[in-house]
Image (cartoon, rainbow, N blue to C red; front, side):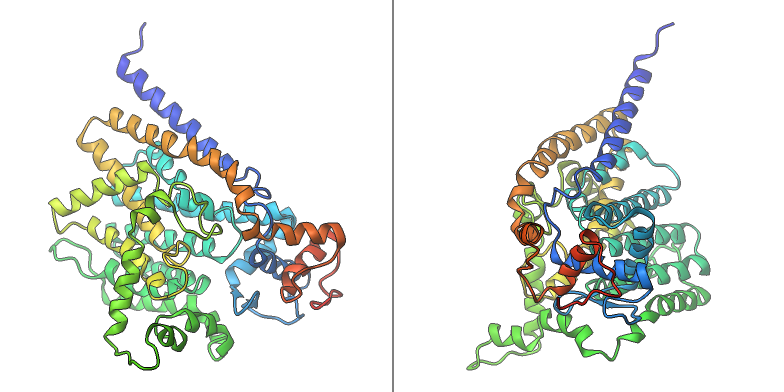
Amino acid sequence: MSIPSKLKSHFTLISLSVVLIISLIALRGFRLDQAPQGFYLDEAAIAAQSMCIAESGHTADQTFRLFAPVLGSGYATPLTLGLSAAWVKLYGHRIENFRALAAFVGLIGLFALAWAAQLWRGGSLSWPMAGAILLTSPWMFHLSRIYWDPIFAFALWCITLALWAAWRRHPNWKSAGAIGLFAALSMLTYPPFRIGVPLSILVMLWPSPRADGPRLSGPSLIALILGGCIGLLPLLTVIHDPHFWSRSDFLAIWSSHHLAQTFPAQSHWQFWDLPLIFLENLTRHFDPRFLIFRGDENLRHSSGFGGLLQPAELLGIAALAAYSLRQWPRPEGRILFLSVIGFAPAALTWEALPHALRGLMAAPALLWAAVLGAELMMEKWRPYRIGALILSLAIAGFFVPYIRDYFGRYPHDSQLWYEADTIAHWRKTREWLKPEEGLAHLYFRLSEDGESCRSARLND
């Protein structure tokens, strides 16, 4: 008995999707200590604090802190430290172990986005297609291979978006409270989210103009606020510490340093100059050279090959934008607007723009839009052909050229960005070339020399 050709095509498409998804998940754990090569000193400093907490419950200076100081004026946040300490206990403390945690957390975020898309569509979702788009995002593939706070904030915000999708279908105070909690936790975990999240919540929960649209009731509003307050409670321990806020204050476009550079002493700036600076900075993040062709010039934020968005992702975003504009207003338009808001934190800073890391809040909304756009195309046109097109773009636009470059050229070109020479010199001579980066040095002494955090001295 012969198998119908449509069934064969469907089976082939699903098989290819499953193979692609398994391969891409596996690639997230491949050569984590070699690509990127080295261990960026921020990564090493957070790792050292996590190891100390795992050992004694205290940070490297033998005090109990919810926020642990790392390099410069940076701080590792409670969720990162807590999960990392537990991870160290379970899986060890090598470089690849810490980066594996980042890869795992990144996958949780991507799964949450697929769940959000399924909820948005009322339970109908082509999971192979969604997986192909989400797992071939160069932006998130790269950042999920680096161990630092932003990837944890990404996952928390993705969960928040999924909870919002659930609330839209069945508005209730429990979902609203969970939205508030996870949104606040994402704000707690990475400073740029403290600007983007409140703006995004307004867009997400603003009453729909449609009579049958979801409404935020009084109990739900109270639950939302309470959830947010609970999530932000740890900030009370550092709210009066000026050092904790100094990095954000320095980078803001309204900082005295930036204004002095932008407006020389002989001229004067006025309040309405700030919105113009913000808009100029925002437009930089929609430059095709940044999003599509080159990415961030900082090789810690992207690999420098092919931009932040891959072809299948771009096609899905374009499809959803066209659909939303033709039938405006559509709720999908809110998702597109969230992607614009996601770049707002980066646009409110002045250093090294456009900036992929500070604009990370845009990534979940763009990926979600891409999945929904692909689903709409499959729904309105021939699903098998659209599915084959998405898979082809994912393979041709990411899987072959991007991965080949990532594990070929990129490890060599990024060595200086990840302090590979400093680490190699220490391993050879036990001489640390950057005495001001004592926490990073501490990580290698704890991890490779077997020192105890209780006995080690930071300034050795």
